[in-house]
Amino acid sequence: MAMALQATSTDYPYCPSVDPQGGWTPAPNFYQPLPQVVAGEVVRFNFLARLEEGVPQPSGSVILPYAITVDAEGDMHFPETDITLGAGNPLATWEAFHGQVTVPQVPAGHVFAIGFGAHTYGGGNGVVYFDNVAALVEGSGARLNAKAWLDGAFVPGTNLMRDDLRVAGLIPDALPTYTNAMMGPNAPDGTDISIAPAVLAVTGNNAMVDWVWLELRFGTPGFTSTLQGFETVARRYALIQRDGDIVDLDGTSPVALPIKAGNCRVVVRHKNHLGVMSAEPLGLNATTTLFDARAASTPLFALAAPNTGPARKTVGSTRTLWAGDAWTLGVPHGVQYTGAGNDRDLILTTIGGTVPTNTVTGYHRADVNMDGVVKYTGLNNDRDLILLTIGGSVPTAVRYEQVPE
Image 1 (tube, rainbow, N blue to C red):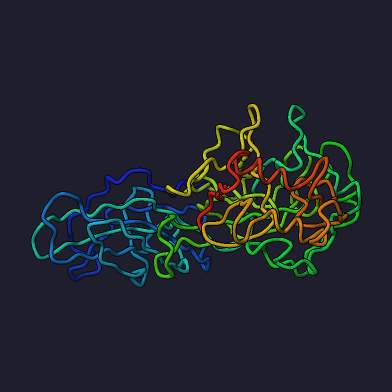
Image 2: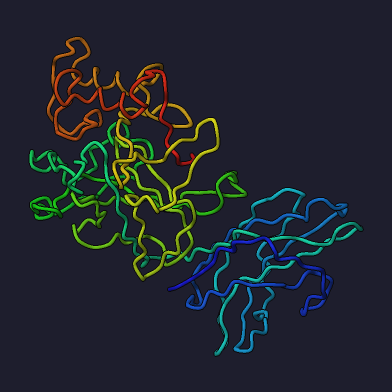
């Protein structure tokens, strides 16, 4: 299902008109068609709206999204019952609005759409602007082809990651026993999640490196209240291969997503690496969508100052996810070498807390270089990678994850 649902400009002025159903309410001035939705499906939508800047403001205003159908000539029609999908009063600054509708029966030759209208009153300016219109169709069937490098396992110059955890037989084939302390607080519920032994038997470029998970974020960052919504609408475990491909639990397929289609930002996460999020919503549908976090040309979201920074590490011409997230504390989230909740201390705690030369073998979050051994000192220790992630010279620096909470 191909949908181009995000408006990229703010030039959608609307002046009041008479609703074709009768009464003085704003009829739709523009609409977003959803050509392949069917009756009974649930469509969720988000958009931003504001009054025009720099002019006298009216005493009041109202915006109304509608469920409509559009015929072959482009004329708008209301279903049997005029479905008004909520209402709001835009201010002089951008506000986020959201709602949902169950798709009604669509007449033959018509396309279902979400329409938008606005009305201002009480004098002053009469223009309302809309932006960032996005929709999500509930269900399943969307597919994502995601790719990433985990810096802890990445070998520069090879375009491959090490699969030491798999070779040592340490990657769990089921996740129910792994708590948030292991996988991180943003990880999905691991209950009843497992993979066949044959998946972990694959060698070569498609060998499994570890578990990862994907998140879908719907809405506009910065508008995070329950009513306005920038929300995580789905989380799914997946597997990452040596060549960076993120695949479904069968070990080969693009990841199946628990939505039918929609505009969502994609987040890639791993238990001890900082996650990344696409800068803009991706159009997700049954035709597999690419999100390549390895490519320098792929734009990623960044937080505002003072917590901004490169979302990924630059390694030659490619990009890797920052390693070292051995512990999670505080918002915004990041990698720390010193201070309360730092990641270095968890390495020391994992090996026993008193003998810094001790080592522990196993599947641990503190194993940030992903070689299957937690080490605090010596060759290939995990502590040094944390210091390199924060910059290598100022131990009090923090490398912040560029994903909004």
